[in-house]
Length: 461
Image (tube, rainbow, N blue to C red; front, side, top):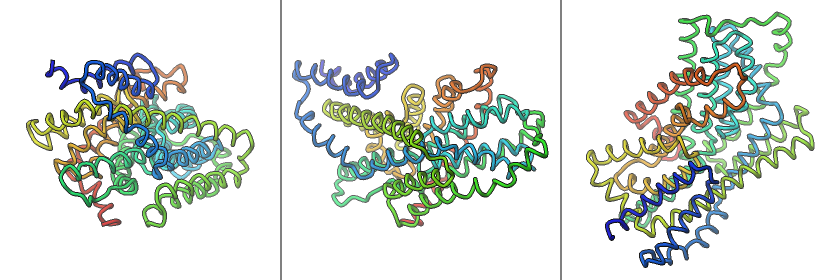
């Protein structure tokens, strides 16, 4: 019996996965499963209820966390840019910039996907927006369905890694707590800290390299298979109509992105303060472009409220799950498994990456960030792994799993807005080269951790 109790944390985790796959809401699945195991453990005398006594303080701490205030502000910023058609104008203008290059429209989609990722920070919003705006245009201009859908799915997931990503905000907060806990367990009572800003800066080079690799692939396809990515075939009248609008459409969003990221990099503002700048700036931008109305503001506020409530409900459910998991000794169990694993820190890291990749098929990044990362991160950090490098590796890994058939979330998002004539098999074929590119980026980051850690050390020491 005692041997079974020792593995109850893993059983509890497996039950949560089964409940989620059955279609129940994430937040209630996490909290409900945890409370059921806590109640059963109390009846049989194998669970200490004092762990649940920490719930009120834990939940109050979550709701008053200054870092997490950035979440609704960044969501508001992204929703405003989406609702006000600024993203649509940006794509048209960027296509004009690259019109003379082979595969120019595909390149423009990759660049705009990067800019939208830096504006919205939400994978689903970016994929749906790009699918609605750019997919019909790419198909109309003769792009192969596989290349068009693959490019959109891949660039849409850039919201996972390009700052100011919501995923990095949440991951940074969790990683900060895990890092401090790991140092306390090692007897370091004046611990170093890792912040959301560290992850933002650390993600810049890997994110930009990923975009560059996407563009290189699109150009290669345009030269090797010209029929898959034909040159610009618009009429002179259509081109002339857009020539006058390039700088008008490009400059304001770029200024907004530079203001948000620049204020973080320079140390002028924290990510939370920069999120406030972004939200206000997006509203001013929409008003200047005469795209602001009561209806748009209502839609933006409602969408922001829905997404924010979802995030915080999941966070609360994950906090309760974490308390019960630790109450059953789950953190000790995971530590023993990893420390006894062949290969030491490298072996443990490989196993964690594989598990997170597979979980990305059935769980969103929010659940993985709040449930899985707090369990595995302290153990890995105590083994000497750099927290910034670990955070970027996890973000890139999740980005890859969101793109991988048959369960990748990005594929489902695009399938929902793609025309009926686009086959699911074409979407799957289109993303395979981009998955290979992302795996290559993970390998590069594993070989050269300085790609993630170099900039944070330069800016923040």
